[in-house]
Amino acid sequence: MFPDNDRRKVWWEVIRRAAILGVLLMAAVTSARADGTNRQGFVFTVNEENDYFSIPTTDKHYTQGIHFSLMWPDDEAPLLARPLAWTPPLGFQRPIQKFGFELGQDLYTPIDLTASAVIPNDRPYAGWLYLGGLREDRGLTAGQIPTLDRYEVELGIVGPWSLGADEQNWWHDLIGNSLANGWDQQLGNEPGLLLRLDRKWRIVDAGESDGLHLQVLPRAGVALGNIQTSARIGATVRVGQHIPDEFAAAIPPRVGWYLFSDVGGRGVLYNEFLNGSVFHASHSVTPEPGVLELRAGLVFELGHSEISYTYVYLNKEFKEQGVYDAYGSLTYVYRF
Image (tube, helix red, strand yellow):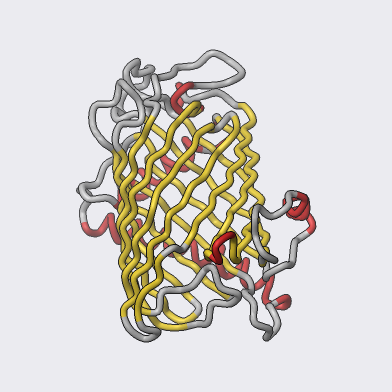
C-alpha cells in the first residue's frame, strides 16, 4: 500500500486532468446544446481503470486504462461519425440514435516490473492508444423489450508510439513508486483495428417510481480485429432509487443511487496483448479460451452528473498466469 500523502497526490492529479478535459469539451459544445425537446443532449464521460484502485492494490497485467468519450445529441451525427450510420438498425422499431467519439489508452505489463529482460511465463508489455467512433441505437425490439445497441470502431497504434511507457512511468513517479524497467521489451509499433457490437436488454423493471427499483439487464456482444476477436455474454442486476433510464427518449436530471452486480464471460479467439504482434515476431503467452468476469459497484446520480465505482475481478486470462486479476474503475458522466 502507498502512504496516504502519495494517495492524495494521485487522486488530485486524476481529478485535475479529468476536470481540465471536461471543461474544454463542455466549452466547445456549449453553444450547440440540445434544444428543449424530449430527447437526450450531449453526454461526456471520463473513465479511469487502474489496479491501484482495487483492494488489495496491485500493479500487473491490465494495469491502467483512461477513456474519454463525447456523444452528440440524439439523431445528430458529427461529420466524421456519419459512416457509422450506414449500417441499418438490427430489429428496432424506429430507434433513437446517438453518435460520438472516444479517445483511450490501455496499458498491460507483467507482474515483475523490476526485470528489464523478457519474462517467458508472463505477458508482454504493451500499450494501446486509439480513437474510436461510437453509435448507440435505443428503443424497442421484438416483444416490446427495451434494447440498447452500441457500435464502436477503434483505430489506433500498439507499441512505443502508444506512449505506454511514458504514461506508466509518469504515474509511478507521481506516486513515488519505482519505475517499470521492461518497456524496452514491449510489443512493437503496428496499427490496430477493433470493431465492437454490444446489445443490452431490460427484461425486468420492478418497483415504485419514487421507491426502490429492481432491474435485470442481460447482454451479449462480439469484437473483431487484430486487437481482439472474441464473443461475450453476461447479465447485470441493479437495485436502487431513481435509476437512470438509458433506454428512454430522455433522462431527466434527478438525485438517486443504485448498487449493481454483474456476471459475464467471454470466449477469446485472439488477443494481441497475449498472442503477440501480428506483423512481426514478439514475445507471447497462451490465452485461455474462456475468461470469467465479476463486477460490483455503486452509482450516484446528482442531477446532470453521475459518479460510480466498480470493482472488477477476472480469472486467469492466459495459461501461464498464476493468480486472478482485479482492478477498480472510476467513472464520471455529465449529461447536458
